[in-house]
Length: 337
Image 1 (cartoon, rainbow, N blue to C red):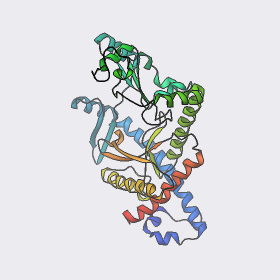
Image 2 (image 1 turned 135 degrees about the vertical axis):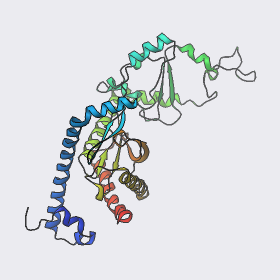
Image 3 (image 1 turned 90 degrees about the vertical axis):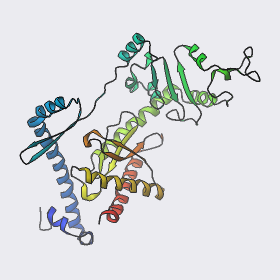
Image 4 (image 1 turned 90 degrees about the horizontal axis):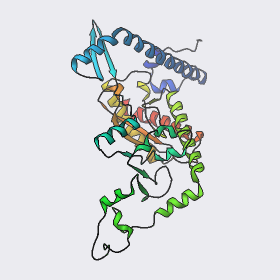
């Protein structure tokens, strides 16, 4: 601390204009102190949450059992203290076990691998799809991670005669005695889109796709690390493949644990931010809305990044996040001041 030091209460009491007029050395010290304070608050919050779990975890579990719930939010009161304990729903899929159940019950076992299927090309990440080999059918979309045009969806069948279930005939074109593969498709007559796939496999092969998959999945993890390290963002789920969800936090709510009202403000903020970033045209992410277990059933507006372009570098990711911080500061001053 120095003679330039302003404490958090002083900063909160000042206007944006007053802060902007401070000398550069003072602004630098404030920025450094706030970053340190936010990091300390994150550590303190995590430690205190662990203490609450130690103190009230058993009571919360008993309350959930009494309510007939295996997961979800439980509210407890201890004098003036109101404790919220959230146990998210966790589902662990054992594909081999599911396949065994399907065989025993004579149920068709299908895997929708439209996005994640090409993960199999990567020796590093193919373990994410362990068990897919037990499927009766698998769907894949070539226009996603295989990087070819639309219209290249695939249905892979363990038993080729499954295609007989969609067989049809027409006396004017697809006769019972004629050779026409169109009878075994849902589309009927169609363009030769399989050539896109063949060309891509010829050019890239398994090794080429493995390099693309590895690079994109690694980029997603790097982007998640950058998001998690900044108080301006909240990472909502760690990336499994190359998709990740997060949200930008307006300056006046950074370092806090948002309640329902604060989450509504953050939702409004992220909708405006995503629209502004798209309109500016320099960088872009999409947005979605879903509940996140740590906040109960409240729908949250999330930013959704897809790391698919093989030319993306870390500098591009940093630039995108910098755009969001810059635009976010402008939007926050319009929405909340």
